[in-house]
Amino acid sequence: MANVLILSNNPELAAHCKMQLAIEHDSLVKNNIADALPLIGSQSIAVAIVDVMLIGHDDTQMQQLKHTGIKLLLIGHQWCEQKQINALVAGAKGYCECAAVPEMLLKAVNSILRGDIWIQRHLVPKVIGTLITINNAQSNTSVKQDKPDTSLLNCLTAREMEVANLISIGKSNRIIAETLNISERTVKAHLTSIFQKLNVQDRLRLAILIKETFH
Image (cartoon, rainbow, N blue to C red; front, side):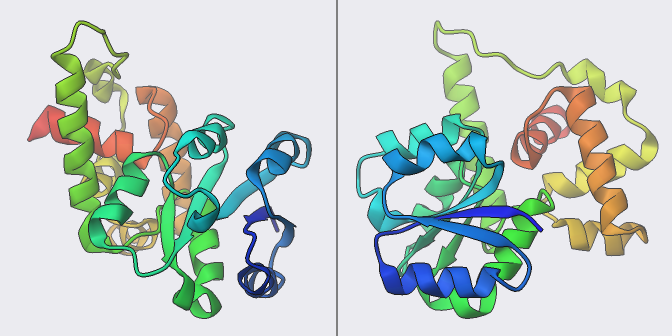
């Protein structure tokens, strides 16, 4: 069971989210981001579900949430693929359509809690490609960016490299577990070890490192 924050000023949407999550998690509803920020650390919030209508076109509040380190699941209405890609590039861990909340919200939250991302699988390579393009552009500027040490790949075990390579092509924890005939718990343990050894924050940054090193 995890503590989940629901951020929406739409009472109907918030109620639907809370009802779906009640099966497995505790949830708290706030209708503005300013009031929610102090709660994130004090109440050990694991995931924040954010109604994009609350953010609008100003990404200041999105950045404030991102800087807390909380995992963000955005909920929108008929977002195009490019908007979904942009959301993950900006630091969100997933995107879910409003219409899919009754069927998919709990699955999405649990997926993010396991360390996966929630987005259409065919978009994952596009997200990775966009992030690589951004990294390359930044490396050509005068501002030096902190990058993972690729030599640390030698510290990974053979199994960890298998997991890392599958991450680089956008595979979920469940698919990795099925492919390698191991449990999802074991996949998560491998990922934790990989992140620590390579000094990367998440699976997308890991995918970028692998892509830039071997492709």
